[in-house]
Length: 218
Ligand SMILES: *Cc1c(COP(=O)(O)O)cnc(C)c1O
Image (cartoon, rainbow, N blue to C red; front, side, top):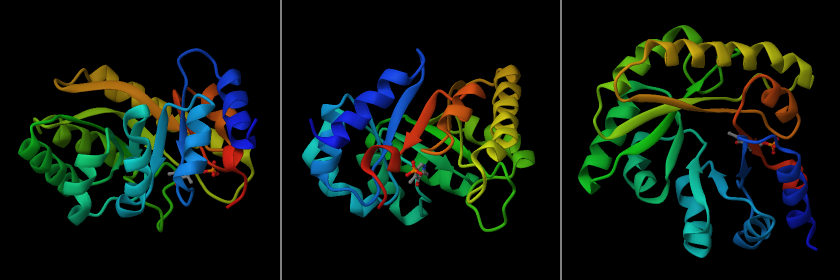
């Protein structure tokens, strides 16, 4: 069996009930992604709208496509045509643009807020203290549906040092859930990558995003 297929199958086999694998596909060919699909992958994440198009054309709706990169507003129109979830909403301006573009084609887009849980100045995402305000803003938009939070955690540190940032994001998730806002349906907590997914699952992640652990180093 292909190594990619094998890695995908092994990771899927380790996951507890209710935790979904997102295959992080940046820089991988459609053939490589297809090998992961053959191993059982059902969600592929992409970081760039244009670069994702060939693979989306080739693989189509065998999987769900999640956008996990930094989304520029001028790419929102194409993004809502190609992706079934946007995991990286980080401003009300972007949320409004997505809402407008979704209204134009008559769909409601599930979105996650990207939390800059380690409050790193050069990192994408919303600081934890600003997430509730953005949640309320998104709740007022008819064509985007807030369904959870996504975080990266701090980069370039020992895996265990991610734990407090994952648990903090989990607490924020629970806090928003307990507000019971109309049109907000807190269901997905997307945290953890190749080096940190086991910790993330213990801290409550139900989507983990794996690239290198499936495909090898880029
Ligand atoms: C690349 C990427 C991942 C996967 O990282 P690996 O270390 O390769 O597992 C997860 N999330 C995002 C947003 C990414 O860009």
